Image (cartoon, rainbow, N blue to C red):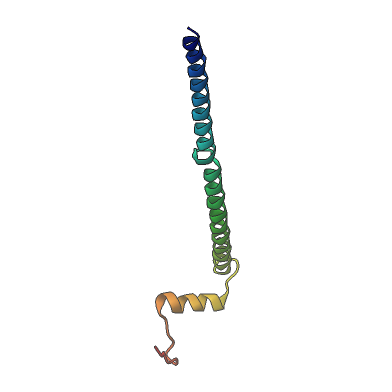
Length: 101
């Protein structure tokens, strides 16, 4: 009879430790690989760094375009820039110029 009472608590202890180990493994996996895990946070940080660099590049391009727009506006006209745009967009060449391609 003592052997029957001995197997009951051992089986319960084994199930308790198995359940604890399984839950521990699950939460460890979720902490590393899950939606809010360490790897996902590293990916998010890399994406944010790349998008910040792209934003800064686009802000520079926008500033350049705003400057060119201002220089071609009615209030301020840059003749050199206007001449450059006419030549590049329309292909304008004066009669006394020679074009080499």
